[in-house]
Image 1: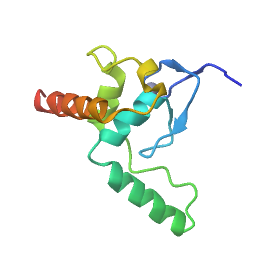
Image 2 (image 1 turned 90 degrees about the horizontal axis):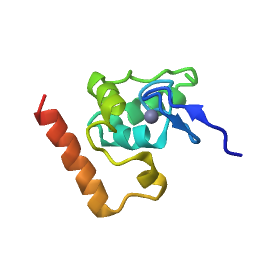
Image 3 (image 1 turned 180 degrees about the horizontal axis):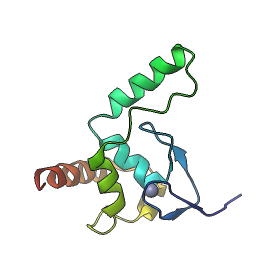
Length: 109
Ligand SMILES: [Zn+2]
């Protein structure tokens, strides 16, 4: 069943939300992809696994990095392709585009 929701992070409407690794937000696919490009993602996943192993099921994550919050919010405005493009898995080329886009973004700060 497709029901429109709002992404907790970028506030766009989306039919699919996924739990974030960084905090308790329910986020759209585009935000999830951006999240996976963030350098802290492995650390976030590791901490979450550790919390689960320790029986801490209310673990709320390492917190949303400020730059990720910002990039998720403005992503569409500065040319990250629209969410539609993410309905299919990214090709290697698209993945490369995304990574270079993100590093460009970071270097321009
Ligand atoms: Zn989003």
